[in-house]
Length: 293
Image (cartoon, rainbow, N blue to C red; front, top):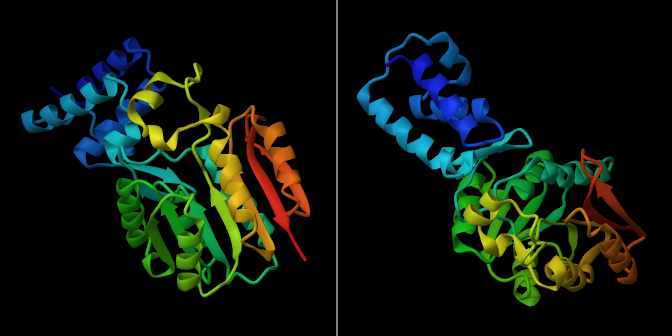
C-alpha cells in the first residue's frame, strides 16, 4: 500500500472516532513512525510502505483511536519554541502555560538576571527550563512529588544544555524547610526571586474535565481538594514569606478561580501588586503577585 492511501484511510478513521484534529494527528503520527518531516509525507505520497512500517503505524493509530494523547504517543511536545520529552508521568505542556513564561520575561526587563527560580510541581520542567533559556545567569530549582516526572525533567534539562543551572528535587512542596535549604545551597541565594507553578487545581469530581485527560494524564498533577484550591492556597501561603525584596510569584489556575485567588493573594499582605492574567481565550488563567522594595 502507498503512503497516501494509508494516510487518507487513517484520517477518515480518526474522523469517525470524533477526534478533534484528525488530519493533524494522522500527519504527526505518520511523520514520527516513518522518521520524516510532515512536509515529506506530501512529497512521498506514492512511496510504498513496507510491512514493518505498517505494523508500527497500526499500533500508533490504535493507541490514538483509544484516546491516548498524541504527545504521549510521540514522546514529546513543543513548548515555547523548545521540544520537551513527556510521558504518562507528566502533564502534557499546554499553550496556556506559556503565559507564565511570558509574564516573568516581561517582569524581568531591565533587571539583572541572576535570579533564583523555584518551580513547584515542575512536571516535564517546561516552564522553569524555558525561563532558564531566557535568563543565562539564572539558576533553577524544580520540585515534584513524582519520581517519574523528575526523571523526565532531568532529561529535558540535559537535552537543552541546562543541567548545570538546574537542580531537581523529589519532594512534597509541603516540605518547605527542606526545599528552601536545597534552594539556598544550589542558587547561593537566601530568597526566591521568581516562583512559578502549575499546581493541581481541578476539583475532585469536576464533571467538565475531558475524559481522555482524566484517563491518561497523572491524577496527582490534576486534582486538588477544597474545590481545586488546596495547592494554590497552601503553596502561595507557605512560600510567599520566602520571596526576595523584588520578586514575582505566578501560579496557573482554573478559569473560575480568579476572584477567589485574587482576594487570597491580597490577604497574604506580601505583594505590592496582585492581578489575574487571562489566556488568549479571555479566561482567567494565572494569579500573579509582584513584590518590590
